[in-house]
Image (tube, rainbow, N blue to C red; front, side):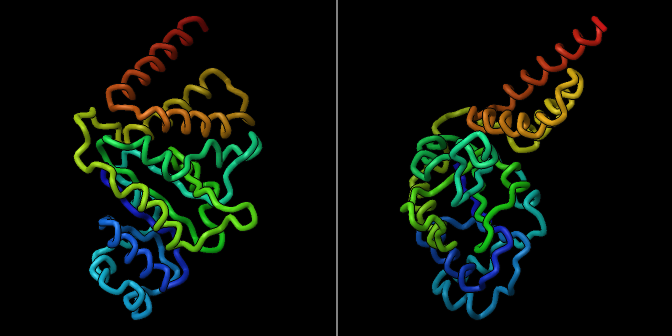
Length: 236
């Protein structure tokens, strides 16, 4: 499985350079930056050392949607995992090692989002993720430096096989987003309670994210939804 590193609105120039260096240390080169809050200049290149080529070739985009395009699986990182149903946006969560075991031998693009140095990923950004990843740290101080967090995750992912093991390719993000849109319309069709919709859609996204759906499976699920919709219409 191919791995894409995505930094979301990084603020500190040196961190961008340090992430480039870490990426090259572990053999990764697909590097995106969403709306950086600082220039990528001399400080970044100085810290990057021999990974200056990654800074020259990294893709700078304006939105997460652009960065995760064509992804089979989108993973958001957080230092504050959910520990109860009241923090449903951040649960259930995987450790880097658990994520590695989950995606080993899979085909497609795995995009990993790393949030801002000060506030991480916002809730609206975590909603876009199939899975949530949290690095196990000591209880006294959960938040890690951005480049250190990237290093821990890439250390675990470094041995993922690039070509897969004959697995059927996973559904891409466009297929899954069409399914989620269909599910949302279905909830409207069955007059699902409005105040429950957001949480229910997020739960469905997490469940289906863990399911490693193929394109054929997405089509089958949408076919079931269409048949249910026709049945509902026929009895009204």
